[in-house]
Image (cartoon, rainbow over all chains, first blue to last red):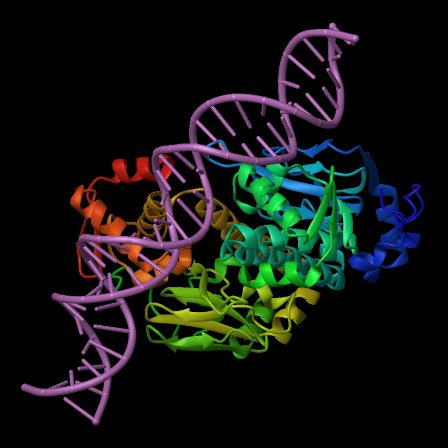
Length: 235
Length: 235
DNA sequence: ATCGTTCATTGATATTTATCAATCTTGATA
DNA sequence: TATCAAGATTGATAAATATCAATGAACGAT
């Protein structure tokens, strides 16, 4: 549990929502009113499936609080993690305008809150407001650029570098702390950075033996961030 | 040279352009007039650099004719191909709305024609026309989704499968023929699918020895598409 | 409490891939 | 034409990674 978790959305007007700034900032009061009426709040427990790969795209999904994984089953039947979505990410974004069905599943990996807005309403707002359309274009670009770049960054590292990369990512980008609970299993880490569970375990143990990190159950503590950084970049 | 290359843009009105349908279809005559005046046509020879990684994003770049590669230098200094852009792809698209600089270089790998439209003009059209904004959202989603999915598909294959995948892609998606000229070097293939030149060469030779393909200089002829397909999916 | 299932861990081994070195080919250029 | 640089190719070897097997630990469901 994260102690700086923001107050949950209690169904109040979207105009008052602390997350409005991300994309909805430019909407008029009237439009915000529409949004408030049309939106839905979904609370999900860790492990809950929000969207299954192949589901029809009907809504615009926004992660308010918590953490989610995007995953897919590849053509040869293997599970593959596409990425980790943090708050303010439009988790259902990539497919929203391009595909009739979701190419990825969306699964909460921590207790989470999702804002759900009918696609039709979003589309209407796009038509009505050029500024909103522009914000959305920005956000979509950002999210997909980030996903792609992360994949590329992972691809040209070998296993130690990948593990260091992902620990660094969780530490800096997600939890903003050197100590955190890994929200996904070793197997899922493997699916995220393309390696086998056994090697995930082995390298984590190696880092532990080298006193770069400590491991207690799911809790990771990065003891030597500089060394981890070095491995991330050169290992 | 491709014998079904469409007539080049002779600076005529964008309203008459055969490629208009992709995104600009919904513009009014007035807006098309604006576009016609504001656009620029860039003819590039094979090898020419259109955009260098790090260049400021000023324009909206659209590949009309030809073929281009998107590439980047990763943090550790290695060249990495992000993808291959085909006609109608918005090659400078990913960064257009999300980053002040281009994260990737854009380089023609065949004689090509690019349409270049000032970012400000595109932005203005987004503000003016909800339909245009919507088309653009669709196109951006499609392009980035395709890039990401291709990367994911490549990631969970081993080397033979990757080579088969990329040959299949060039054959089916790019040239629509079982016989074609490879537009990139062995080294670049390696950079595209994350493997070493030597292994690219070795596996191509292997396919040749197994009579799955024939190689004459840069010309590839796929002799047994079913076998290649099988390797792509199971090899 | 106990069974069973998934996750985590470690070691031994096989397979895949990268690296190194040498040669050959090709294309551009002085 | 001669020369140089880059690309292509092959073989031998080293390094990285996956696979297989076995065991212990954690967690739900009966």
